Length: 357
Image 1 (cartoon, rainbow, N blue to C red):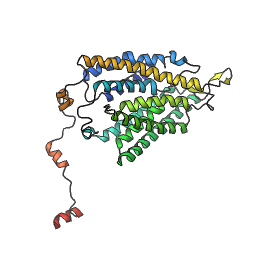
Image 2: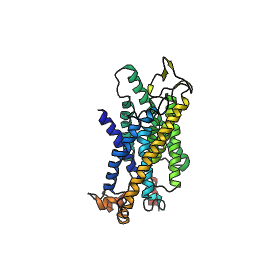
Image 3: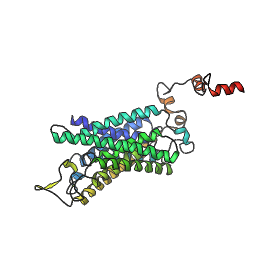
Image 4: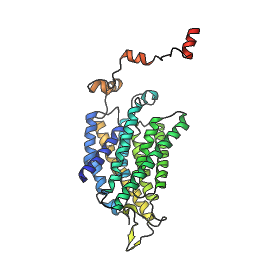
C-alpha cells in the first residue's frame, strides 16, 4: 500500500511536466523524460525528505512538507519550467495569442474538479492512517484546510482576472483552485483554518503574478504548470514554516501534529528560525536537483534533434500527423457554418425588425 501511495505521488510529479511542454514535444521523447524523472530525479528528492534523509534532520526540527508542495509539486514545476524554456514557445504563441486560448472549458472544469477530489486522497491520506481519534481529527483538519485554500484561491484569481480583463475567466478560476491546493499541501497538517484561508489567498496572487511574469518574458507554459506547481509550491513550503500553529514564533509543531516539538516533557522553544531555515533548504535542494537534471536532460534531447516536433507537424497539428483518428474533434464544414447562424424566434424583436426592413 505504501508503494502504491508513493507511486501515485511519483506519477503526479512526472505528469506536471507534460503541461509545460505540451503541443510541441515529441510523445516518445516525453516518455523517455518521464522515465528519467521517475527513476532518477523524483526518487532522490523523496530519499532526502520523506525517506528520512538529511533534510529531515538539517536543523533541530527538519523540514515540513506534509503532502508534497515541495517534494512533488515544486519538483514537477521547476522541471516543467526547464522544459518549456529549452523547448521555446509554440509557433505564433506570442504573435497571435488569441489562437491559443483554451477551446473546451467544460472539460477544463471537469478536470479541475477531478483533481480537487483526488487531492483529498493525497492530503488527508498523508496522515497514513486513522487508527485513533487524534489521527482521525488530524485528517479532518487537513481536509478542511484543503477545501478552504482551494476555494479561496479559485475565487481570488477569478476576481483578479475580472479586475484585469473585465471578463469572467473560468480558466483562471480553475487554475486558482489548483494554486490554492498546491499552496496548502505542505502545511495542511500544521496550520489553523484561518491560516489556510490566508495561504490560499496569497497563493492566488503568487500564481497570477508568476503567470503574468512568464508571459512578459515570453516563456510559453501552455497550462501554467510552473506558476501553479512551481511558484505556488515554493510559497506552500514557506507557509508551512511561517504559519505553523505553534504558540507564537518560539514553539513549533511541524510533523508532531496536535502536539508541539518537545524537549523532555515540555515544549521546546526558540525553534522559529530553525523551522524556516529547513524550509528554505528544501526549496533550494529541489530547485538545484530537479532544475539542473531536467535542464541537462532536455538540452541533450534537443541537441540530438529528438525533442521538438518539426515545423510542418506543428503547423498541421500532432493529431493530424501522429494520431488515429486524425482529429480530436470531428466538426464538418456544415456544422461549423450552422454554428455561426444565430436562430431568431418568430415573435422576437429581431424578427419584427427584419419584417419592417
